[in-house]
Length: 413
Ligand SMILES: [Zn+2]
Image (cartoon, rainbow, N blue to C red; front, top):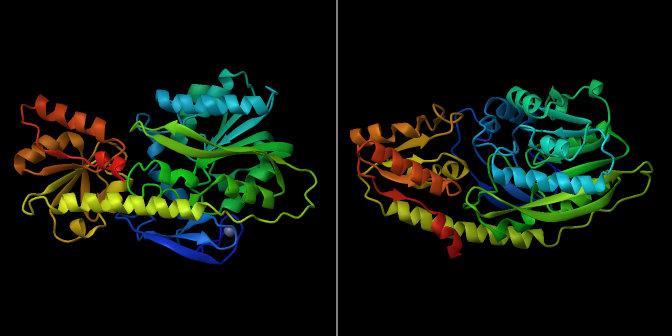
């Protein structure tokens, strides 16, 4: 794989012609490869929407290996450890079982995280399951929880010795990878003749339908924005036939819906037929609406913070994708005193803009040193974070300070 820094061609159809939609910038952890942000662009040939980043796959691999949030069982997705997570995985496993009747089919989950999907397939009677993930912690958990064949590899270094498969699952992987077509080539090499590829990603067609936080879907991790049309174009170019595509919703921590696009595609032995890409006619309208609605909410949030007393510091609690964007705004870039708190052990002690993130348990002692206004900068986890802060202050015999959250603004667009 080339490590030369260059902007991206369309990850689906390889066209070099693209239009700028919006510039996204973040203030991320120091050494994070996505610092400096990126342009969100649309391909003029197929309509695909993607982040035109200069980051390299090696940098992304390093990030996912070293800073993987998936290693914290209480916060992760994909491990099936929360009921909502489990329901989503059961639904997918049941869907697959309808199309893959053979319980001896050799099935691999690429990027298996903590093995949640494999566990549900095992519960349905599948007995030839394989998990592959770049994280050693994930592989260890999958081995313990599922007891299946497991290998620690990144997508790009899977050796031929793992063998061939009847089904490859790529669930919530493609939105993260720099080279989508190389990823599909790799999965193609892993598939037996007439094998099936299952794809699932966040559905960009419906970002506008439920806003989880302003511009949340344009984050430091998701650089490809798929729709059913994009899946059809991508797999059509690889001469796969479509078994089925569709939209499904799952429920996330804030009790909001989350749309995912899925598709099952079958490898064809005859790949001589020409395939012409179909331009995605609806995505741009929906992305523009998503951006407009997001910006309205973001403006209200900035107004709220700008109206706070200037001499009182701010404590930002819940350092995730929205905080990264908030910290890049003028409010935090120019002189405003602030402190950062988060309870995720993967984030604590990391630095953003030279400032170290403290564990949330330090809120009371820090507050006793210097009073501050608390801003809960995660909209998705606002309710549980607010509850935790209240309990912490009460437990320490302190009056709970004013807390500002923004999730109430989400319904107002
Ligand atoms: Zn394209």
